[in-house]
Each structure stands twice: as structure tokens, then as C-alpha cells.
Length: 127
Image (cartoon, rainbow, N blue to C red; front, top):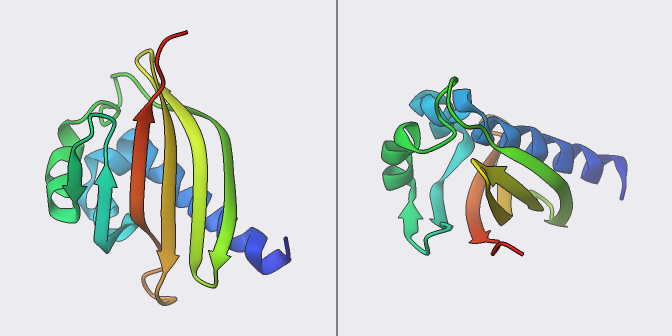
């Protein structure tokens, strides 16, 4: 991986971690900066989310409260799929529930920076 690719992955990881944090989940302003205008998600429940429905629901979801359960993550890796497109994969645990996650981040311009274009969360059954 070249330095530019490493920088792209590092920026996407940094923004992914912001979305997993209580501050990123509870602040609509921050979430708006992190979610692409064409954002979609298939959540752990199988529900399909668009940008507006996610922005509305995010502050009430688990992981949004400073004094509530928080996401822990492991195995986060990224790959540049094309210039301006990064794919991240990792696992999370939130309040005892494990999920495998996949995110696609894209950078349309320098002003908006990296934004999450697509996210999928798949529950991991208990062993």
C-alpha cells in the first residue's frame, strides 16, 4: 500500500471511529458531515436505512449516550478500492452483542472529505 492509500484508509478509519463514539452518534451536525448525501445502510436487524432516517434515529440508538454502553471494535482493516473509495471491515461489541461490519467511504472533494456511503452490520451468533 502506498502512502496515499495509507492516508486514505487512516482518514476513513478516523471518521468511522467518530461515528461509533457517543459524540458522533448524538450530534446531528457531526453525523451530517460524516454521512454521504447518498448514504444507505443495512442494519443488524435487516432494516434498510437512508441518510435522513439514520440522522433522525442515531441520537436515540445505543452507543449515543456518554453514560451508556459504548462500542468496542476490533480487527479494523481497510482497502482502497479506487481513488476516493475505501472499504473498511471490522467487528464491534455493544452491550454484549457482536456484529461484523463493512463500510464504504468515498471522498468526492477536499471540502467535504471522506463520508460514509454504505454500511452493513451483520450479527454474530453466540458460540
